[in-house]
Image (cartoon, rainbow, N blue to C red; front, side, top):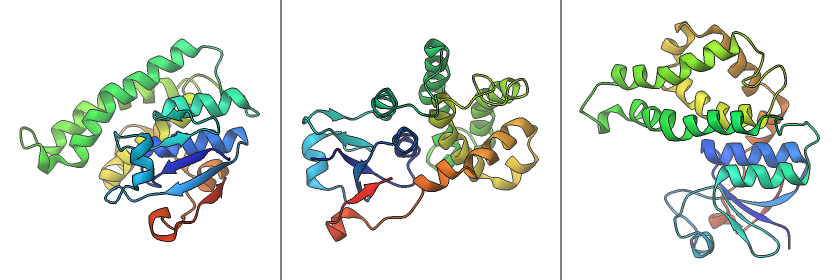
Length: 210
């Protein structure tokens, strides 16, 4: 049995998992889902109902995107994406996931959080954005001059941030971040993992990925 990946194309967590799998050269059986109609097969192995979920050949289940990234890159890392300073990488990713993501969600859906307006939530999110800008003004990638897992783990969320108000982002004082993001979204790796697939629930068809 080939490992089975339950994924949703636009989810940044699922994106980072697909990026690592594609970069590693591993092949999995992809089942594209709809978040409003989650398949029973996925919920049976991962009741929390979020993507990505990876069912391994031995029956083990990985339910966290970072765990899937490590699984793939520990098997094979031809692009040398695993950094020499894992603690530094973990620090950046932890801040992205535990701090920035919360403000990003409120910025995206400000009408659901009437305590403050959209500009306030964007301002809070920009605390992290400004730190990335400062770092990327000194190095080509987040951890230095080479692409690492850190970039793949964070870029999908910055992409989402940039799309909330694209006109504002295009003129915001973050030129190095914009350049880094543009390079990422135009990369062969990113474009390869954003291919559209029919949903598995409708077609019952899995696809070899990548």
